[in-house]
Structures are given as C-alpha cells and as structure tokens.
Image (cartoon, rainbow, N blue to C red; front, side):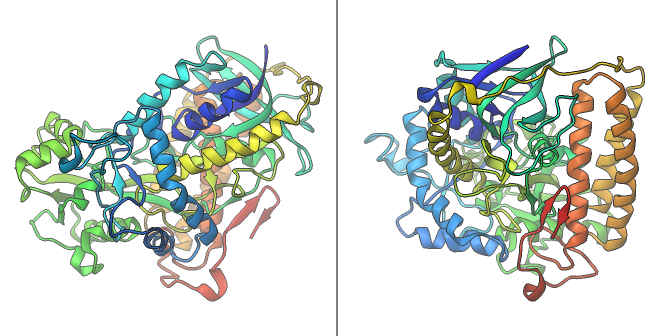
Length: 548
C-alpha cells in the first residue's frame, strides 16, 4: 500500500506538531506516530520553556548561560538564533491556545500576550526565565497543538504506525537494505501499521524526522517507552551524518520508588529552593559546585552518582519541606499528587531520587534550517544535532529549540516542496518480505533488549572508562550480529524494529565515547578527567564509513 503526500512527518512531539501546523497551508501532510499522538517526551516535560522576558534578563545572558552549559561545543550562531527567536515562538504558542502561568500581580488584567509570566528558574540559568504551565508544561503544549492538528483536513494522523527505514532514491528495492550516497534524496519511508501488521510505503516530497530521543537505550530513564532512537538509527542507516552521541544527559532527579516508572522530579523544584541531602540528612552539593543545587545537570548528576558510590545507598533525597505547604501544592500540583500516590508527601517528606537517562545532546547533523546532508530529509528536536546544546543541554532549552527549528525547517521545506513536481517523486517499490516467516523465538528480542539496557547503564553511564567502554563495544558487536541475522529471517514486528534501533544507537554512543579522550560536559572518563581544548574542542562526527 502506497501513500503519497507532500510532507511526511515522523514523530508527534512539539517539534513535529508545530512543524505540521506551519506547512499544512502549503500541501498535504502525513503525520506518523508510533503510538497515540499524545505519547511523546514533550507530553512528559514538566519544567517549561526557557525564554527572555524578565526585566533584568537579556538575550546575551541567556546565550552566555547556554554556552557555559555546553562546555565549549555550542555553535554560538545557533545559540544566538534560538535564544533571540524564543519570545516570538512563545507568543505563537499562546495564539495557538497554550495557557502559561502568569505572575500573581498580572493574573487578572490585560491580554494573555502582554501580561507578565510567572518565570521559574532552573539549574545553569542566571535569571528566572522558565515560562511554564504549572508543572505540566509539555502536556499543556501538546493539548493545544493536537486540538489544532485535528481541525485540519489536510493533516492525516497515522497513529500506531512505526517507521522502519527511510527510502532514498538509490535504495535498492529490497527489504530494508539502504544503499545511498549524499547526492541522492529521501523520498519517503517504510512504515509498519501496528494494528493491521501491514507495512505501508509512504512517498513524500519532504520528510521530517522528529522522533525524539533514545532514553530507552538505558536501564533507567525519564523517557517514555517510545524513546528508542528511531530517527537517529534510520538516518544513520540511510547515510546521514551523526554527531556527539557521547553526550547523553542524565537528569539528576528521577523518583526512586519500586512502583514508579520514568517519573521525573522537575528541576524547577530545585529552582524553588529544594536541597539535595543524603540518607542521613546531610546536604552535599556545596562540596561539588558553588551554585550547589542550581549547578548544571552534568555536575549534579555526577555528584549524586559519587555520593551513592561512596555511601552504598540506593538513593539520595530532594528536600523542599522548608517551603510553605500551600505554595508547594499550588506550584507543583502534578508532582505533589504523584508523590502522594506513592505515600510521599512533598510538604513533610524528603523525596527519594536517583539520576536517569534523560536527553540526547547529539543526533542527526543539521544546518540552521533543519536540513540533513541527505536532500529532502530534515531533522529537528531531540533527534537532531543542531549545535545548540554542545556537550550539555541547558535546562528547558529543548522545547525552545524544537519550536525555533520547527519554524525554520517549515520555511525551508515549503520552498522546497513548492519547487518539486509530482513526477519528481518516484514510484516506490512495496515492502518485500519474501523468504521471511513469523517469529517463534521472541525471547531473543526481549533478552537482547534487556542486556543492551543493562550494560549501557553499567558501562556507558554517568562515569565511564576505556575498559568499560571496550567491554560494551564487544557486547554490542555480538548482539548486532544476532539482530541482523534475526531481522532478515523473520517478519518485522514493533519490538524487533525498536530493538534494531536501540542497538544501533547504543553502538554509536559507544563508538563516540571511545573516540573522545577527555572529559567534557556529559562525557566523563575517569582515565581522562580533564577537558582538553587543544585536541578535543570539536564535534565527534560519525557516518557509516567515518568516525572523527
């Protein structure tokens, strides 16, 4: 079954949805998402969107904070572009129906756009500049965008559809085998309809990857189950350039509870004065950084990891009991209710927390319009490596980046699509599963999935060494051989597609981490504990035949 469209969008977070709303007046849009449209990392984002609105704040200060957090690897031009476009994009969200929190003094007067925001503060920021909707900002943004998406007849939603591979013009029309050069162009993707177990061929004039991150590569993550690195893996297999995958951000504060899964305790809690304490009630961040709890995430995560290794405890605690109980309930209604459901009262109890894999600072390399080095293929949001985050993302810059690059990519793709004639989108071969059979050994998939996530956590986590990385490299090589053999002999199912992708991303993370012989930002190697600007002030760039 072939579906032809002008714009093919893979992913339904803030990046994909806002892009869709911008391009829909100029053509047909197919929006593919692997589960329901609300299932995205955006939906789980609690803190907010960083942007300059405070009287004493400035673009220069926000840019400086971004560059400091990125530890030398941010693209300064990109940082300036994203920061300066932030207020415009926030106002656009308001026009689309997003309701942000306003300061108490302005909550009853003026228009929504001109009133003052209730600006929060998070780690690494020199000023309060986090625009938020209580502690459920992502959910509010998704709600508003999806309402508008569903009102457009020209946007077709394909829920419960999981992309398998991109199709380039030089692709040999054989099951999943990609052979391309950078002069070729992307013309769509093969996508599995999960409900009907049918592979569909999507042909498009422009294809956008907005699939989010790859937190599920690790055993412990704040990410939803969908975060299996699909866009990064597909782009790499198609021949696109990838960069900086060694820089995996571990969020310092995820809820530690046997019944809790992937639940993040927002950095905004520390922004409102919460302290990190050990099991004996002692604060410890003063031993690691002068900014204490408001240090950048890489510093706080390593501090917690160090404290846990020294003490042998299972967790540390986030303590905000000194703030007024009504303030806590009103500022963090979602967090308060969730913790209470596990028997933890934030107003009277310290909250048990541990670090967990949270955000990929690297990804598919793009220019300042979201273009990859494969023609007609774009990538934005966490899937992309735009140059904004460098070696460590500044808190709440992620949704900001997604909004800005969705706008820039939309402007570029509209021009491109309008210049492409219908006959320039070639007829594509149907998915070929000749010689395959239904799997009777899914245990291989589940076992490999579990093994990858465990050794990635143990060997390629917050603190690394060459020995640990080499051990991980040997394991992923064996597993990759097993996956390739399995993939070519059995019909594809969602678990196999995701396993193939997390294995690919895991391999790339390991290769990038082994390559960088220093410690910078989110990459910390105990054999090379210092930052080395003379040799390593550069991106780690990787393609199928190149690493450098």
